[in-house]
Image (cartoon, rainbow, N blue to C red; front, side, top):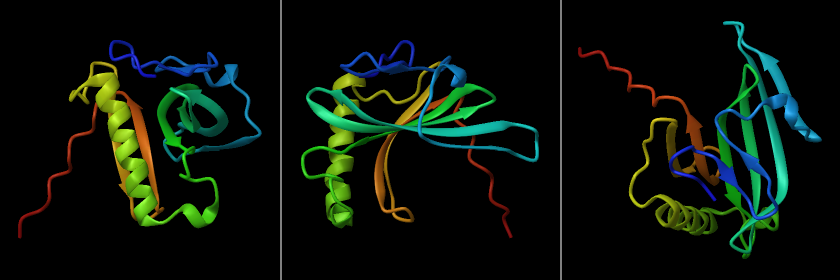
Length: 147
């Protein structure tokens, strides 16, 4: 699914994305675009129905100034996300564990690379577990003021 040397994701149907993926080469009925105060152009596109290892995934791509910046992948088969009632913390923790296994199988324990970094997380605010691929250097944590 993910190439550790290039950061490229490739699904069984040939659908592929990587750090140099150009927004203009993709079309999605589910997209949202905006420009921020710094003049960056952002666009989110969602793609459904892609498979890897016999499992179905939904893919959300955040493009920044025309290039892929962040990809979120979510396993949706196996009673995970097939119905809105499925989105409970217990099922999302199962999804996170499945994402962890995918990353472990593809990458071992390494999560930081020259092209960016990957993680599997659960966001309690949104209630979803995702596998994230972020292109570019990991931002340094902001120092907290002592006081």
